[in-house]
Image (cartoon, rainbow, N blue to C red; front, side, top):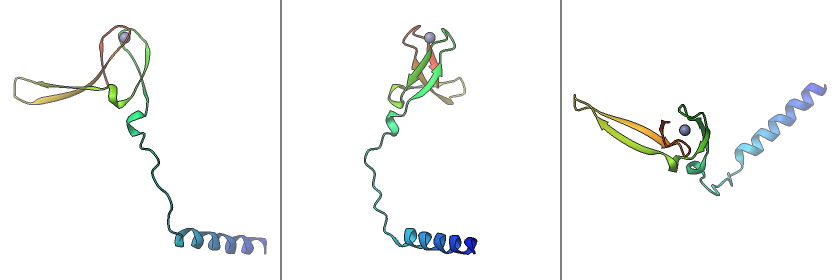
Length: 83
Ligand SMILES: [Zn+2]
């Protein structure tokens, strides 16, 4: 008996949710501010960086193919770190 009551309640909640027009909106797109963490392999410092810190470097090899490297510069030892 208790089981049946619970089921009916769930169905009602579901249909209310589906029929309602979504009022969701984007307040702020923070995808460019998401901080990632990397450890510098040269000096062992743990660094937090955001996409804006990444520098893209393109290197063409002897075959003419171009490789793309995404790098950040370690603020402590100044070495480039691939991310
Ligand atoms: Zn470093």
